[in-house]
Length: 339
Figure (cartoon, rainbow, N blue to C red):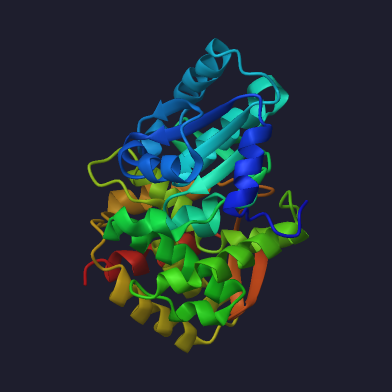
């Protein structure tokens, strides 16, 4: 693994010129908003692939359609796939690349804050399956990641908020300075946050141990995201993680001795940044979300395993949390969202 996965424009141009064919994967949004900037930077010598936007299209059906396109264009093992988009494009495109002819090279060019600091980094590729997020996938590391904040100029405020949640997560698990990030200053924290993610990945590329700290907020977050995925009010990934961190910090106070003022501080962060979430929890929702946590990939021996905190920058992995405690944490979220 490289010491720094982030490509300069010159390095990306070299990677493009070395490939037998270049394919650029976009979704509906990045085709319109981001492809023109990519073309100005890197030219038009590529074959365009497109997938519908949104988490609901991160499926085996879409992966199959992309494999057919690669096959139809006679792509070989020396082809390069450029994923121009957010987390869905990074996840789906990386998965497609990992399987096609047992693995071709790909580069991520993230166009959302969330992708720049998280989804595009680390080699986790996946599709959703049977209503569950990221159930089918592989570790397949990109040839590199090109960070260009100019792509964020057209980013809706909701997408900024989604990325901000993951950025704040790094503040809790590794780098307290990132807790100062907000909707106005986030651009200045992008490189710093991306390097936090990369340092953690470098220590544990295939998530056998330490890399699990990146799942802080994600056990509840993924369950919440999966539950609302096919409703009239689906959540973006970072929005669900913001909720998941609230529950995880509440559990941390009770199970790991986290100082209550840390939880209260996050409550303030949440109320400043995330109260506009179009999300309310009924009792029926709480029961369904609790059940979904039982399917989490991190579970072992029938136990739901959380990443919790003893203190800021002191995460604890594989904390077993019983069903009743999960329900209580979700009740706290239910009350929070009534504010």
